Image 1 (tube, helix red, strand yellow):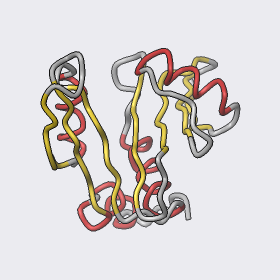
Image 2 (cartoon, helix red, strand yellow):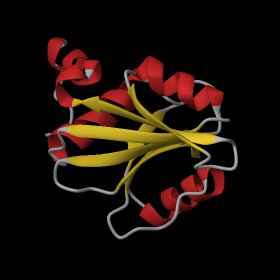
Image 3 (cartoon, helix red, strand yellow):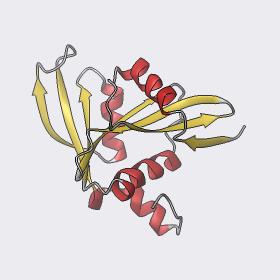
Image 4 (cartoon, one colour):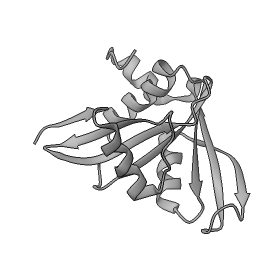
Length: 147
């Protein structure tokens, strides 16, 4: 079964994120979706784009959708295309799986906001361009990602 990444049909990709993580529409929302066969298996969203930073969101339906390729392309988009210096994520404290994934990807805790979410609080995490191993992996292996 073939798989590919797409930014086509942005409303479909937005609806995927909305249904799974409750993201609201914003004019600056950008998305990358992973398709296997003909099935959309996961989406990475970017919004709150300031010129120096953006917020990144992940949502998927199947284990293994968030591959190294998806991560390389997503961070390349944030750091190279959007020219961000910092990418950040906000994770409700009750979503231990997402918090674990974000930390393993390379996000670092910045602050915890107690009582900021019905789950208890919100963790704010960030990754700087210099800390991003996903950019370095693509460059080290001579792959052209997204410029």
